[in-house]
Amino acid sequence: MLLKRTRTCGELRAAHAGERVILNGWVDTRRDLGGLIFIDLRDRYGITQVVFSPQDNARAHAAADALRGEYVIGVEGVVTNRSAANVNAKMATGEVEVRVHELQIYNAADTTPFEIVDDTKTNEDLRLKYRYLDLRRPSMQRNLILRSKATILVREYFDRHGFVEVETPVLMRSTPEGARDYLVPSRVNPGTFYALPQSPQTYKQILMVAGMDRYFQIVKCFRDEDLRADRQPEFTQIDVEMSFVDEIAVQEMTEGLISELLRETIGVEVALPLPRMTYQEGMTRYGSDKPDLRFDLAFTDFSDLVKDTEFRVFRQTVADGGAVVGFVVPGQGHLGRGMMDRLTEKAKNEAGANGLIYIKNMPGEVFSSVAKFVPEDVTAAMVRASGAAEGDLILILAGRKPDVYAQLGTLRLSVAQEFNLIDTTRNALLWVTDFPLLDFDPEEKRWVAMHHPFTSPKPEDLHLMDSDPGKVRARAYDLVMNGSEIGGGSIRIHDPAMQRKMFALLGIGEAEAQEKFGFLLDAFRFGAPPHGGLALGLDRIIMLLTGSRSLRDVIAFPKNQRAVSLMDNCPDVVDPRQLDELHIQLKPGL
Image 1 (cartoon, helix red, strand yellow):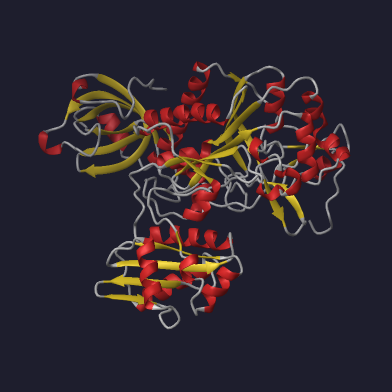
Image 2 (cartoon, helix red, strand yellow):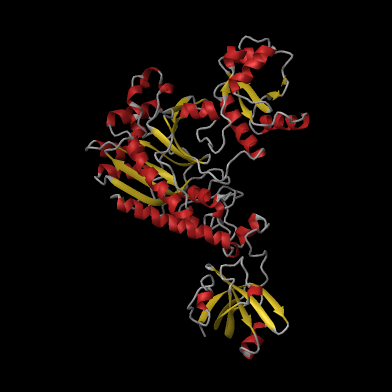
């Protein structure tokens, strides 16, 4: 018999004393104190203590003797205030308990392979294999609930601002988007393939041509690429496109959404407008196009100060067009040789640098690891230029641009983590703008789009498209939060002639362009409005809002780092008859 729930396990308070209630849930813990059996009953709303006593109901008390962890039960009883000595201040429902008069055991449970608690030390693969148990943990349920709330907020926000939610196809043609496509063979068109979308980029541009001037979608996207903690083969984007807008209009609309999300989900107010930083500034000051500004450690360029020293590493690096750069680590000038050797290994192994140079600005003494080759006055000038105070440490790398900036950026983050310099109570958001339009691929010896081939160049750089395309800046922008890129977009090319020029720069001939993007180019011939937009990574945003370390903790059924779902053993082999129907023959040995 089903006991129909009247209250949840997180709901009851002292004011409910005397009320007859029905609760349903899972047995969290069991304590047998002689004549009384205490059960902490758990559902996704919380935990309530229920008590079985022979004085309340002998039959229910006898049945409760069989209860063990994760049994699924229903109880009917009366809410009773606990005595002052027994109040549990750590539980929201700790002032009360339910004296049980009726028990219904819906299902027994085997002993679980790990404990259903937030601070489980269980191997992640085991958690993923038994994902249905992992999702019972309160922290995982809180993550999914916050994600649900966030998606509702997104839809309400865009609806208030006149956007239309349009679903785009999941089966589309394969187009170059920067990563490998997941391909789907067509049974009814043998030898042809669909691709799962890496993004709805071309479709949302088509929607702008169609006159849907404000579009959004919460959409699944797919990329067949190597995985890491903040990457999954299938991920969710908040996809946005707008007509008759410039960069500021798109950014302001996005800022309003992000501000509302942080306020309504974690109670954080965001000052608007968000700060803006150019790509060049991000790389030369922080070594990253997604700098974490919850701590400082900004770079100082020492190149002009050291270019004439006898130290060959400095002199030759600057002469070859490279840079000598460093940053100050506050209060760490006292570090001994062992720690400095460890930082040097970090610079080499984690950042890929050839070595690490350092200056200790200690009271009464300035020590340089290259004092034999660099005069004291130059070292003193470097200390002044860096702004280092007494007791500070200066870490320095020398190398080719832009490699040395990226290397120092990796070391900057590693040092901040090592010495707990990151203010985790802050949320640092900013826009990174003015990205290069193109990046040169040395292996293929051609230009590739830094974002995608539909990104518009800045009007003031158009004269460089033919003479020096590497210096052309894009009308592109990324939204960064706490050192993670949570979104990116651009103003798109809407002029057919400019789009053909872009394709030509990328080595895409007219025939190839027509074959792969003919539908978009044809649409542009019939009047395409100026338009732009962006895509926000919903999974990554939720990961940051919840303080999770992995996307897998905010996705209900994720894949592991080998792109495998351990719970249902996916991907897996299929029946040979299915392959025959799709006209697919596997290589021998597969």
